[in-house]
Length: 107
Image: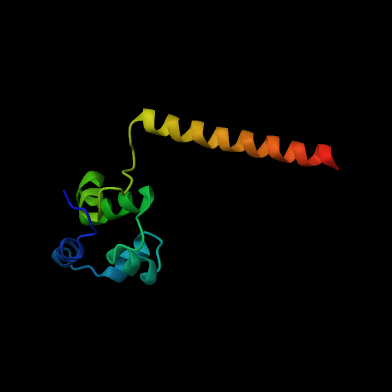
């Protein structure tokens, strides 16, 4: 399993399809600078970017995630992961609401 962004693998996949890094970045809605950061392990790919890369390169999102590093999110993770993420967001929103109500009560 890759522990880093495998730039050689990505470049080989692009070359096999006659594509460039510029095309990959544009398709994912990334700047070339953002893609360069990902290639240098200084920026992780989002789940959406993983999905787009998979479509362009004709491989599974899991393969993109594996080649991009183990902590890259995989789109379409199981419903448990989505529910847990939503629960975290609700908890954070509730805490922020309570903080704002506390500030309003102080004024």
